[in-house]
Length: 182
Image (cartoon, one colour):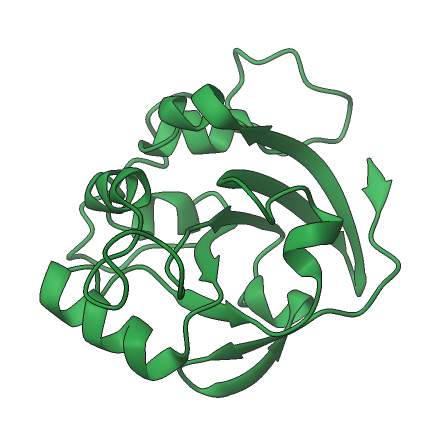
């Protein structure tokens, strides 16, 4: 695990947010760097076509949340443009933040899309995984997202270190329109 020593700030739908805030109280965080900003083909009406295709495949967040995991998108577009795009494209379930510093450069997603996974231990944040280019094509469903996190699917069949949370398979699966435990 790579300790994240630097403070990062984002603009979000509710104002300023730190990297720690993006976890939304959960233990794990996945940040997809979506290209929606000036200079991208389709701007300001569309995000990058590949990033848009991936956003179309994001499942209801309740399934990731049930495993103490939050998925967010981050780009350079202002929040007003992000909210307009999300509404038009039907992506209301994706928390989407505006990068305001060098997060993208520091985590290898300044020139190309990519997905970073993080885990927190109290207020300490660690980067645990990074994938980009063709590897991002494997993202898009709950199991693949969980498989890149430090805790994985947290099921008994996984070969996990002592003390990692594990439950029998399928017990955490839920209907996203019913209350769930996270």
